[in-house]
Image (cartoon, rainbow, N blue to C red; front, side):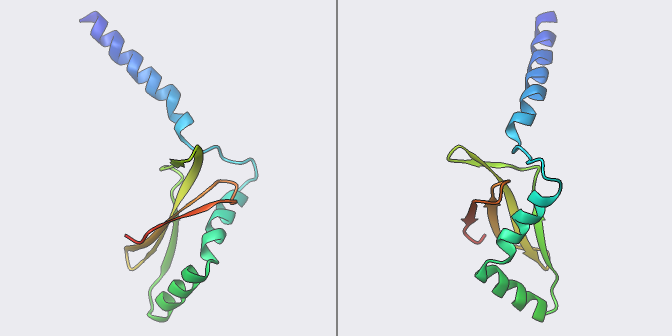
Length: 108
């Protein structure tokens, strides 16, 4: 029984140590990476057209940057950016923390 508790403690310690490794590295640039990630998607032509249509219909547009759910693809780390209006997800993008790369995920 003692070895089982040691095993569980060891698993917990390993999970705790590796958790930060799963997150994207945050650039040391204050809040600039956050603004850059949102702006990169906000000013895409299809996003602007959708946001304009939502605003005209009276809906509030939300850009939700999910730092707590990083996505890894082709060896790179991305932050999910969800575009929402009226409580519904319109589209999800993945933006690299440096803002250089944007991956579009098809509409849900």
